[in-house]
Amino acid sequence: MSAEPGKPNPELEALKAQVQALEGSERRLLDTIKIAVGLMLGLSAILVLFAWFASHKNYEQDKLAIQKALETTNAAHLAAFNRDLDNVLNARLTAREQAVDRKIVELTQSLRAQLSAATAAGASSNTLAQLGEETNRKIQLMTELIEKRNAHAFGLTYFDNAIRAVNSRQFPVGADYFISAALFFMRAQDEVNLNTSISRLNQFCFPNLRAEDFTTRPVIEEKFATLVEGLEKANVNGRHAVALTDLRREFQAARRRGTATK
Image (tube, rainbow, N blue to C red; front, side, top):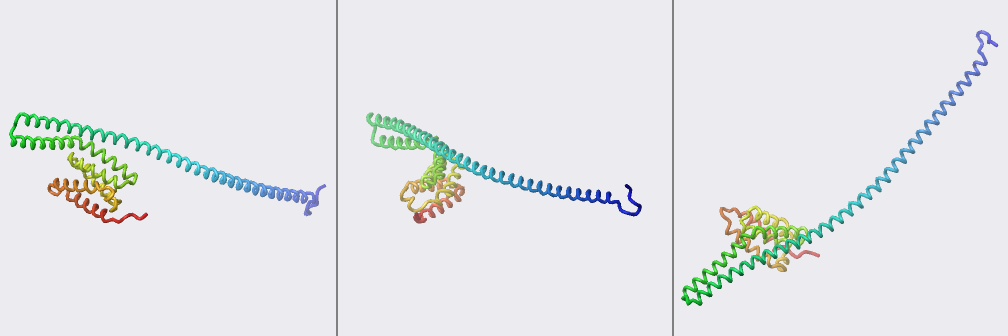
């Protein structure tokens, strides 16, 4: 049934109303879907962030635990290595010292035997006195020659022991070893290692020494006096002037420094 011209068609209007209602329902459904999807995405993001935070926290804890375990293991291995190295170096140093002592004793006995033979042959007192002086001079020269030949090796050994003593904060022992190293490097005429030993002595040991350290370890002062005396004799054109000044300053400061507070 067709509608009259100029009048609205009821069926058409009803269809339009139904379409509008459907469109409204679709919009509401789409809005609901969008909200649901947004909520799901937000919740997913929160879950992902929480999972990342939890795993990252566990990862950091695991990393710290592994790092601590590695540091403990490395420290134990390093301590064992240093102990073994100390034993080896001390054994080598002792062996070298014993070998030097044996050579000196053998040469001394040989010269003494020559002196005894001259005495038995009825040499005059003047001749025996001259021969005795010559023998003592030769013994002293041989001792200096043997020490000089082995001085560099002794210096390196003492220097290495000094470094380990400083690392373990045994500063009086380190000072003793650094001075011994400097003395041997001076005999070996090794200027580079001599200056390095003096520099390390002033840098690490003397600033950490106190008056009581010189009382409990008097060898430090004795060796220091020998080192200063040797440097003064070798101070040609003032090449050791700075080293002597620094040594005396740091030594006197350490000697004046009071007892450490517990």
